[in-house]
Image (tube, rainbow, N blue to C red; front, top):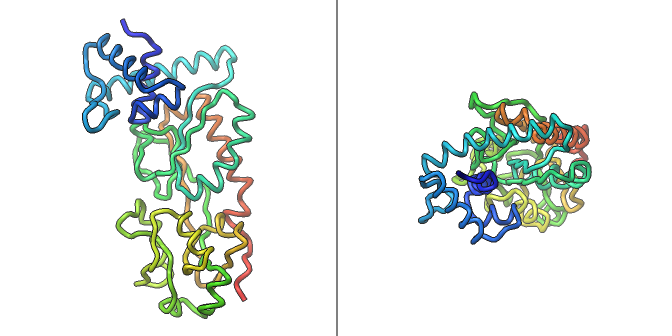
Length: 300
């Protein structure tokens, strides 16, 4: 007969796709994680995790157990909630790097003070993990998910604009219109590493624009702009709080995008995930002036 605590460890290994990730979350060492996983596999007489070149990858039996164990985990949580226990456990949120670092992460302190038994994991790679496959509990994406297993809602619109450092503009001049951008150094994404078509900003500003400096990281792009490498499109919620950046061409270059919030319906019914989604909505409401600024002063 297997030990329920071994199932808990298995769930963590499956979600982190590694023994080390599970060890870090649970406060154990990887050797203990491996030993407990071996004990569970022996008790169930099957292999759950492929250990070769891709440790943490679930076998077919592992995937079946993950679905069943997740339901047991949620039922256990429902019992705790029914008898008045404070919600506890891990809630994993996937979100874009910029939104996660600028809006979500700074607000986490308030949540963990209110809910000290919750463990919050922020995954800054929304294009590569799936709430439908239970790799995360909540996902915040630019593209509206299509999976019918998910509960999906619009979280918020947000604005983006064209920004540059005053030092760069002093050297190269302020462009008078989008056509003048062809003579400037542009900063943007690496085209073949984009995880969402919504990140193709430069073509929307002026067809055919290509970055001279590119990165898969929006924060790296912003740091390059602050230090005068060039100009580029940034979310207002990031750029407007940076004194080293000013907005240019605010009228012709005003881009709007949408964040969508999604979770599996059964996961969303758990108390811990409901509390975190409510907190996300409150956090977004408080950040509305940054996400959708009423007015932005252009460079002069």
